[in-house]
Image 1 (cartoon, one colour):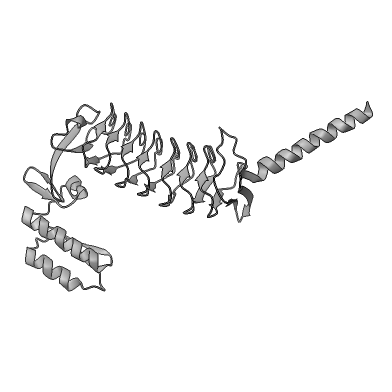
Image 2 (image 1 turned 60 degrees about the vertical axis):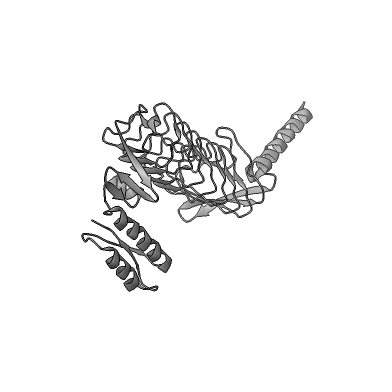
Length: 332
């Protein structure tokens, strides 16, 4: 009996050691991880090549720091961030994603409520459903032009998210993709062909949405946005009506210019702020001046409270020179 007890104990101990090695340091075929203190933080380093494993709810192998903020460093060579990889990691404050990563899995950062910012590299082509759901401290996101969709629930519940850049590569915005966010203003490029149901529902800080194309718009896409928020739609795009927005403003496009009634605007942002650029010919001259200034390099300088003639616009651009600041002319 004593001998049998010793054998049983040895077998149990061996199983525990095996599980610690396999589950505690491996995160995929050629993916390994290590965690150690880094000042007052904990630093999780993920190294190797190829994809990270996908996980189920609360099964990723790295520990949850109880008190210390968590930093994550992913080495170049890792090609994916697995499903649920950092789900419920409430102490996660920063992560470095290398250019080797091509996909971010479903719910990868779900409930990462202390993650304030993230840089998504141009190598990423796919961001899974609910990837950043309830990342309540995330303030801004720049989606790379390699991504073609904002999937279901991707940024839903990101209540501190006030700005997002949607590139021309995106063709669809999924169900509740940007619901319950802190977004204040959004421009949707004409590459987008569908905006799904409740996509912006309960985005209670929105003041304006500009829709550049004529996408299909799902039910309640703008439900419960503020009553004074304006959804700008191209003339004739009646799909904007009855989707939850109290105010729909139709506009026209003439080349690169935006037009409401007799007023012209040089950009979507100018249209939202009702900053006109003058007559059609003055606006065309403004766009040309801005294009020339942009070729000169440097920082843009906004000159307001003066009406510039076409000739003055040209002179201002020439005076700026190639090694000084840009001059952006605004007609008032």
